[in-house]
Image (cartoon, rainbow, N blue to C red):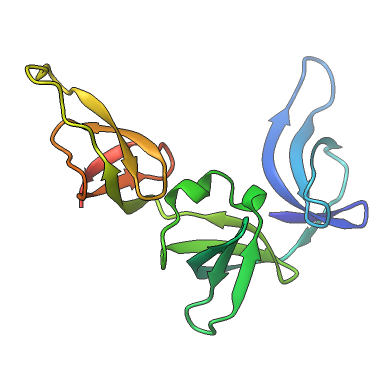
Length: 175
């Protein structure tokens, strides 16, 4: 969710409700300012009022990388949005051309992206398995088209397409 805090719109990253011993309960929240991009931890008492700012989510597709920025386009209106590497975060390891993401907007400004649970990527480098190494569930390190390195079974070869879990970064299956 997004809230109005000190006259600025901030996105709530994390929330914890705490009740320490014999003290009053409070909510500890991590907020990221939309204007500055800086994160901060704040405490709110149970009596404080906050103003919620409406958020809009849209399906977008990754188009290309422009210098450091990542360019996304709306498949219906073809409107483009540029995002900084900080906003994309770890998602950059799983972005391929025309890959679909869910983008969240607050006041017409992109604030976060959400990747699908899994993506299909092409293997660019998969070394051969060691001969005789066939113990149960032996893994090898392979490199994918986006440059990310994952563990995969010995039978995966260069040029194959595999499915990777975007939340854990682990190999799931052949595609």
